[in-house]
Image 1 (cartoon, rainbow, N blue to C red):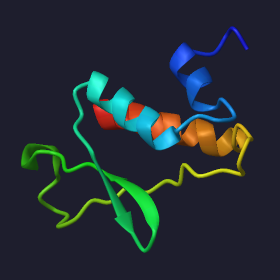
Image 2 (tube, helix red, strand yellow):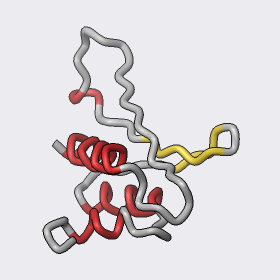
Image 3 (cartoon, rainbow, N blue to C red):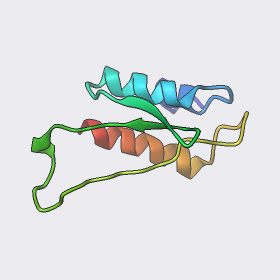
Length: 91
């Protein structure tokens, strides 16, 4: 799939550590994140500076899952949605 960006190809590789790839990619684009475990599952959290929040809303939460069936690239729509949210986070 030579038409896909290398980072995305790495992300959908069967044995990829998707959480590490997400965090590394975000950091390379200037977005810090923290991996935390809640009820035995890994979560990646990003706290944006206050100036990025609309004061009309008290809390802004964007959630996506990056898990997949072991050894698979993940569903096309899910992997692509993860990637779009990552790009949104750096905008």
